[in-house]
Amino acid sequence: MIDAIILAAGNSTRFRGNKLLYPINRKPIYRHLLETIYEAKKARLLNHVIVVTQYHEIFSDIDTNFPRLQAVANPAPERGISSSIRIGLEQLAQISPQSQGCLFAVADQPGLTLESVEKLIQYWRRHDCGIAAASHNKESKNPVIFSSNYYEELKTLEGDQGGKKILHRHMDDVGLCQIPAAELEDIDTPEDINTPQPAAQITESDFPFIKDQKHVISIVGAGGKTTLMYTLAHWYTSHGKKVIITTTTHIKKPAACPAADNKEQLQNLLKHHSVIAAGTDAPEGKLIWPRNTKLTDLQTIADILLIEADGARHLPCKVPAQTEPVIPKQSDIVLGVMGIDALGGRLEDICFRKEKAMELLRTHSSHIMTEKDLAEILSSPQGTRKNTENKDYYVILNKCDDREQIKQAEEIKNILKKKGIPNVIITSLQKIPTPFDI
Image 1 (cartoon, rainbow, N blue to C red):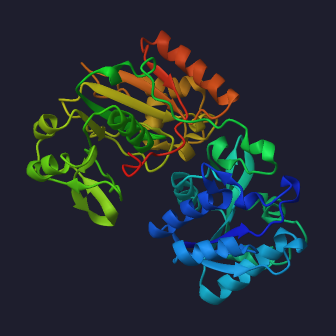
Image 2: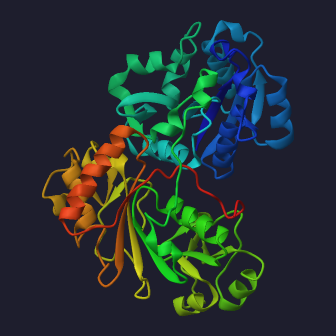
Image 3: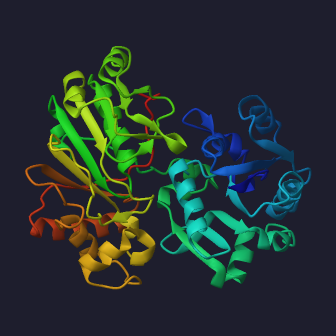
């Protein structure tokens, strides 16, 4: 695990007031990021988490509601962000002297999600780089992970110099991890808050099958399967449906959603809950297919079955192996997901089962992915469309967070239509509505 330092001590001079305490969706700005980091801590993605701040409101909130985080004071925030970095690293040296790496995040990024934090951490672990930065359109953004090799150099920063100065000094040791643009937006002025943010929208025009009474829906591919599953569950339950989520591979066990693996228990749970998970406990807090229940049993007790039928290791693109995906024969709808952030990346960096992708596209591992490449994977019987015979197949182009990405997705959509795939949905699934929200 790595450690984390959250920078929450700024004076907010451009905001004309204390922006960190300004409410968005009835929560102060800083709390959105704090909750995400706290979830990462609980999921054991992070070891020690230090919050550097000058505000007693943040100290009090951490003391009361975030016992696994540690708040330290910056007595001189007017000295700039470098002072908070130095204070955080000095505290880190005391509590984690063997720290191998540290994630630096700023508290005015309320849109950052747990999924993206995990993606950045996994990127840093997989790649041979001392610095891993969140990025959109090849521009480095916060958060950034620095290996311990850079701690002393970070302490030499002065004034409002941040870690970006160190990053630019060592570009040969920097890796850029693509994160949706909306998550990387920080709040500098009150006008920034009024900027519309992309959101997941489930509508009958895009998803015509949602008006039907019964379905077994399998979700395959990469780049937002779990998010899509929960978004659909949220829509269905808000419209009076009883929903079971499950997997033919493995998924994280939903923390706020009851789970069981036999018909009697599941049937009882659905009397009291709108959505439940069907699965058998597996190592690392995962669920696998419920060993004591048949799919036909699930069909008899729920209106909608949502099945995550593929795995992609948090990458935006996938070409399945011989035994993948595992789509039940009873499934009548298959949703093939791909993240638009795969576009423009090297095949080896963005595609799970890269050898299969190289074989399908007849190219090499460092090939830069184009719109035609993504359309080929999405339409091929050896790609995302695999094992979808006699089923309604929909393509979900996800993470389309700005005009340029929507334009790119439209081009892919046009290519797919020419290949005989009319059902293509362009979306930006930002927030996972948890079963607790439902």
